[in-house]
Image (cartoon, rainbow, N blue to C red; front, side, top):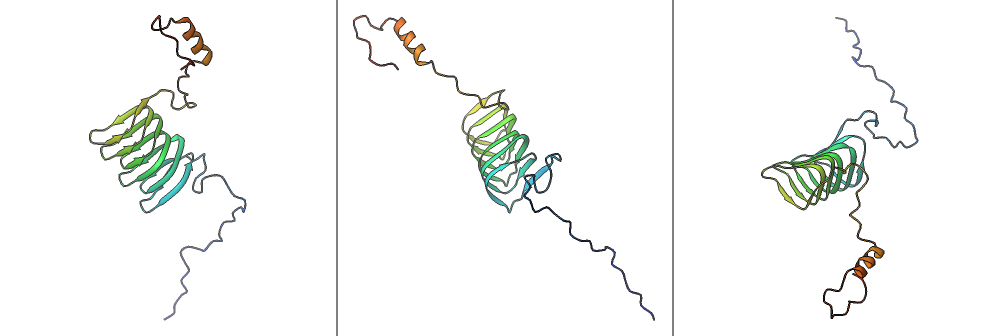
Length: 177
């Protein structure tokens, strides 16, 4: 009985040559291939995360998440201590930090948020836990909106000199408020 040598079904290939210069693109996708990245349940990250992909968080993150043109989804097992900035934010897990969504922020039934929300649209599902303030703002996606400026010092002085004193016989308080 003669035996014939068996050839492997897959031929081994040389490892691809990579550049030794550091790349600022995502290690798994280029920014032209916008997809979804997942932080798995056994992963814990600390730091500032930014990028051009959607993000699903099943693990733990501490720091900031800045994905202004993409979506962030915090799954039920996700735990985040960070400020989140994205187009759409959906929370089914726990978040401690401020949420800024240019389109929408949704706190699902299982979600827990401790922090402020700024978004064009906000949905708090029945049964969710939320502690903070909500600001409905259609300009969320643009440059941060400054608070209404207080009257200038000149305006304050002008208005205080044109108004009569509250009581005719009382002296005016020194200094301006």
